[in-house]
Image (cartoon, rainbow, N blue to C red; front, top):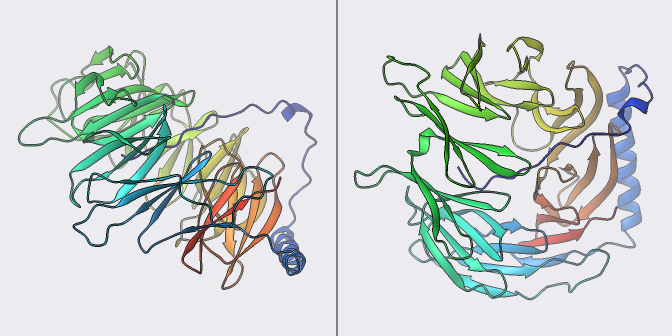
Amino acid sequence: MTVIDLGELRDDPDEDRREPRPPRSVGRPLRLALVLALVLATVAGADAGRERLPALVPAPTGATPFLAAERLYVVEPGPDRQSPGTLVAYPLPAAGRRGPLRPAPLWRAGLPGRGEIFGALELAGTVVVTGTAVRDDTYLTAAFDRATGTLRWQQPGVAISGGRELLVQTGPAQGTTGTVRRVDPATGHALWSVPSSPDALHVGWRDDRVDRLVLVPTEGPVEVWDARSGRRLRAADLAPGALPQYQRAQIVDDLLLLLPDASTVIAYGLEKLDRRWQVDLPLVGYLTSCAALICALGQTGGIRALDRATGRTVWSDQRGQPVDERDGRLLVTEPGPPGAGPLRLVDAATGRVEADLGDWELVRRLRRDDPPVGVRRAGEDKVLVADLDLAAGAVGNLDVLVGATGDCQANPDVLLCSRDDGTFGLWQRER
């Protein structure tokens, strides 16, 4: 588990007044492609005389960027595999204002470990990073002062964050069991601790924060804990007398979903651990919320939308894979190689396709409820970027980023992409 981005769904006040959509024409995908090609040519032509220059940040070989709300953090690797890396903080361009072409670092700080950093976030005046300690399965979490870059604390484990809570999870070491503990982001002091092996811990989210921890051991009772107080709320043996067995588990809102094998899903109420239903499905890979339904995703693709109360299949899609949800609509793609792929807008209640948005690669966003942004290559040194408006079922605010090559991230105001000159580019998004 690494750092997780969270979000919440919004109700659309205009849903009941929306005009019915006309029937989809078989020619719409072709028309959409032609329109996008025309827009690309128009935008590229307009930019020929007025190219928007991004702010440029050095990107040494192997550097990893982490975009925050007002900062960019870059992890620069050490000169060799035995040397620790460096965390560098840069300011982002202010919205609507032209900043320096090459912003100076705010600070630089040496990293305590020698492994790969795979997560970074800002929390309570600190910058928390997590990764491997010595390029093996030993993990380390460290916190730096956001203003100065001073190292405040470090400790073994992987960070899990949502809202204001910071959890650190450690695995078994030298014959001991692992633990999950809530720590004070400012000091690293443990506020509470619970024994737990990494494969037994499952995290539930509510209102943009870690809400519940559920421990599902190979044998013995399942336990539900309050993530804020560390208080155990409920414990129950869900399979008394059964042989010890590892089983996958996921929390979807107020349900605990157990997968004892690849084709069985058993649902329990999270509050009382009471059994709700059991269904058999082919090769379930993952379960997630899909508006009022639960989406069971196949290991090789495909969606089965399940009724939360009974587990009954309401609709299915043989190849789709949901990647976002807004206002009762799903943004659905298809499994394939990395890069741009077809995106469709689907009514979550019925599975009906409402719009084809064309081929796009979704950009990693700071928060899950930030507007979705798509990119795709538009030549050797250009990237086409667009806002994906799920409410309108349309693609808009198109722009061409000259010199960009991909690997993009976004917050609501800034888009970061790798560039062909060995830098990270920071483009302000105009809305």
